[in-house]
Amino acid sequence: MGFSQQVILYICIPVFVLLGGITWIAYDTLPNVWSKEKGYPTLRGDDTTETVADHYVKVQRLESNVQAKEQELQLAKIAQAERLKNSVPPEKEIYETKGLSFGADASFAPLFENVISAARGSGIRIRSIAQTERPGADTIVASGLPGYNVLEVDIVAVGTYSEFQAFYKNVLREYYLTYFAEIEVKPWELDKSVLISTIKLRLYTKT
Image (cartoon, rainbow, N blue to C red; front, side, top):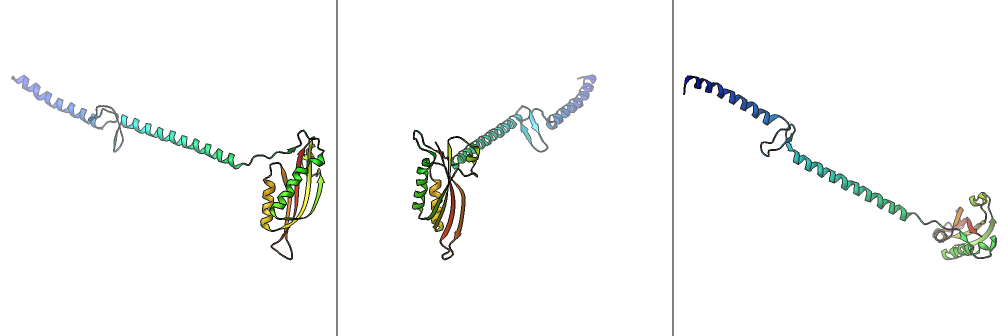
């Protein structure tokens, strides 16, 4: 090997070493470079290195969790709607004398009988009954709807708390509309366990 070849070799070796060091530093420190272990791009943070594939898997997992939560929310809304639907009692109908030639007064007879039966079944004792046709305070009367009839029944009765409670439940259990317009209760002076109640009931029919 001649003198010139030795000089060239001594000059080239430091150059190759320097270039190799620069390449290694860039390869090892810069973000979004090729992974030394796996050979594809990486996402680098301050302390950890996450591959693009790992990041994709994590995103897919998060999206799946979001979809599952949305489905749970929809199912919860449906369940809540069903509970509300089941908790609302069906609307009562107004008693209608279909195909019967009843006048307004006679049309109340079946509903009035239901009230008397409810009183007997509960155990309360009726002391007096008064009736008022088309009471002015009623909404249907005030609206003047043709064919609709309203009868207000004033009842004074005596009984215990449990007996009156059973009476109210029996009346409200009826299929046709009966409205408690007013209820007043006070204890009997001679026996506080006995109650005296004044009740205003409104019966509705359509003829």
